[in-house]
Length: 52
Image (cartoon, rainbow, N blue to C red):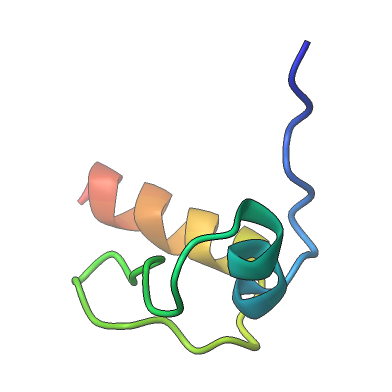
């Protein structure tokens, strides 16, 4: 069974872990995400945009 990725991982470390190119993970508005942003923050922003 696959594990859920922890919310306190940074975007830069997540991209390294998943072995994807830098800039693959984007903000909800489509811009490139800062590498020191936490995944939990990104999830909150996506949920907020979805509910709007």
